[in-house]
Amino acid sequence: MVYNKKEKIKKYYEDEADIYDYTHGAGMYGAQRGIEKYYFKFFKQYIKPGAKVLEVGCGTGVFTQALMRISKSIISSDISDNMLQEAKKRNPGVKFKIADIEDLPFEDEKFDFVVAVNSFSYVPDKKKGIAEIKRVLKKNGKFLLVDMNLLCPAYYFTNLLKIRQRKIWFSTIMDSNRFYLSNLLKDNQFKVIKIYEGNLVPHRATKKNVKFYLPLEYLLKIFPFFNIITMRIFVVGEKE
Image (cartoon, rainbow, N blue to C red):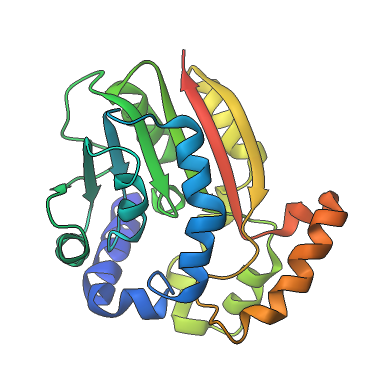
């Protein structure tokens, strides 16, 4: 069952690669806004210039660009060769490698940081995935995770409408919540340094419709309790 799920996910992204930036919004205004307002600041808070970084599930390389602004010592990986081909177009000079998060082709304790942006929730066997991430991290190395937030109503709405036939992957966000991720890290000898919700504006938002989300974002700043329904979770785990 796990194997079949992995093959379905791989095939989906192999077929979707050349239109992914549009269908998933990775190349659109909302994604770029999210990178500048949330993701880049998150990366920069922990990653130092020259740090050895492994990016897992890099997709079309949109977030690779942000990481390269901090450290040039990066290897970006993905299970889909077609996605990597798109990432290479966007990031000339970056070292890319086909890799399954559950079986990473790297030696022990090679990296200072492992980064996963919107990819870890797609790993069928997350316990095996986190064990591999731990293996390739140096002692006190950090896992920086950004992923979908189970509590965000938008995912349920798009699933009900069957937008882009997202039933293929909707079940993957069931484990994407602060409680599961925190326990997963702790159970695998990671210290949870930080965990919080953020990034309300969808990646596919345009300059025009982003105005709809800005008042909501403002309200969330006034009432932080409602941050639990934002679209992403940000997690920092340190290998003990």
